[in-house]
Amino acid sequence: MTDPQNRRKERAVTTRHSFGERFTDHMVMLEWTADQGWVDRPRLLPYGDLTFSPAMAGLHYGQVVFEGLKAHRRQDGTLATFRPDAHARRFRQSARRLAMPELPEELFLEAVDAFVGRDGDLLPADDPALSLYLRPVLFASEPCLALRPARQYTFLLMGFVTGGFFSDRPDPVSVLITRDFSRAAPGGTGQAKCAGNYAGAFLAQQAAAEAGCHQAVWLDPVERRWIEEMGGMNLFFVRGTGRAVEVVTPPLTGTLLPGVTRDTLLTLGAQRGYTVREERISVDQWRSQSESGVITETFACGTAALVTPVGEVRDGEDRWLIGNAKPGQVTMELRDALRDLHEGRAADTHGWLRTCAVSEPLRV
View 1 (cartoon, rainbow, N blue to C red):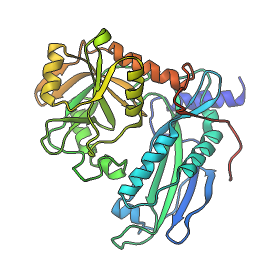
View 2: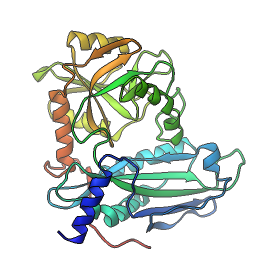
View 3: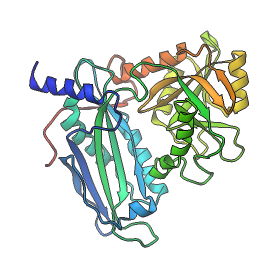
């Protein structure tokens, strides 16, 4: 076995079940100032610590947005990033909501290509369950505590090799309905992928873990009865079987994140002949329709989680199962369809994959 192959194997063993704990060797950096705009081009640098002023505005006022996307090694050995243009658009939308400069799509894609081209060789060719997770982040780096949008920002892109968020297998997860907290409010930042949304979710996630559940489920912030999303993932509900299958997901109300995987599955579901639509579903509906067999499956989806079946729901002292608490047929069909795209077993008819050749650094 050659040295590069050994390196890939070693990295795969140490990162499979340690999501976000061990990073690759490089990162991409870009800066913006009020006077010059985006300064220069994305720079590929060795991964390492950064030095900032204690008065860095992002640290105090939360002007921080980020994204999460993946690159996969396909069957033919090539590397491809999945829907980076959609992530670039959402990154811009998040920045706009927090009064931050919007990174042009071409610079976002240039940064992605530089990073994947340099560190993508860490993905082994014989382990398709592994992927290269990319984390672009933009934060206010001006050393100033004036209560206004910053005049200096730093963009970084880093990444790590990872397996499945929960497991490499589609094991069903259990969830806890969150009654005590709201993730977002109308007119707030729920549709932006900003750091504060996730910090505010940790307490609910801790409560879910204490109840023996994998994740928390968020309800709408007004009536506290409509299902919105699960942790950092979108939710889907399946009704019926055979030709009568319906695949539904909560509508984008402005208080939940417009997931790229969510959008992808709506398209893939329609291609498979399912009836797909957005629909408000209450907690009471979820329970009664699960118990009566109308809702046959529930699954979560996201970049990290891919497609993950939900097997059990808890709401205070109440508890119910989805189907037989095992992965359902529609869930697995959509999961397989998505993986086939990622790994090059299915034709990319939508132009979702951006191929990247392993190359030398853009600049070191």
